Length: 248
Figure 1: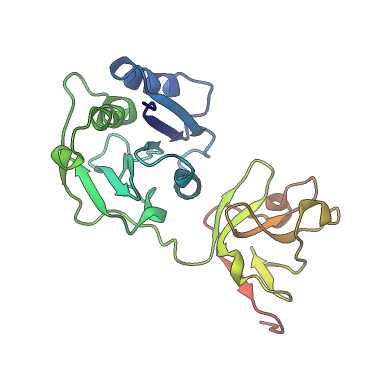
Figure 2 (figure 1 turned 120 degrees about the horizontal axis):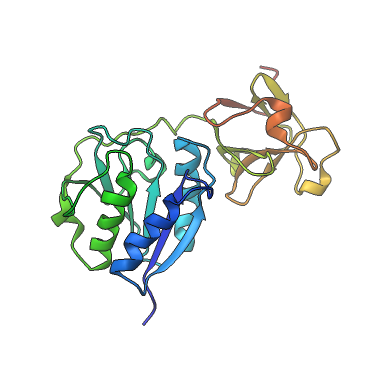
């Protein structure tokens, strides 16, 4: 029988013990679980980047996987914790918009269950969310851990924008690659990018270019340098796709 899979995605970095403590809570109760790190290098409080990487990663994991996402600038407040059910996967994390790319979902549950023992006001990921994951691993029905969420926070992810800056400085947008035709250009941060390429090697040095990335959305890339630096781009910045022949 295959081991259950739990993924972790946080903005904790690797300098401190936070990630290890999340894993310890889960492993101490379910030692045969397979823990997979999606990333812990989300920029601090980077909800858009976290949501995008979760959205573009989860489907590669087997159905039945549980995804713990702890990017939680509102920790210690009354913001709810959610369990989101979609496509045979479960997602656990704060109700702060980090799950916006997953909506609509089959079920969104506001967690009201609390584990026994002391709760830190600064680390709900360890003290509440990880124990919720443990309950799900023990086949506790998610519905028994809370109630239907009435109005989960949704970021406005329908508009065209930068959703992530990757490690190489590529500017990742949510503009679907099917919209990128010959002659199109993209405006990012007031700068217009015209060149369209099929591979990074086809980009001239010092010049940003448009490419359809691995998530099948439009990215702005540069050859061995940061397109984000060249354009002054950051997550949340609006972009505008200009069709062929338009001078707008």
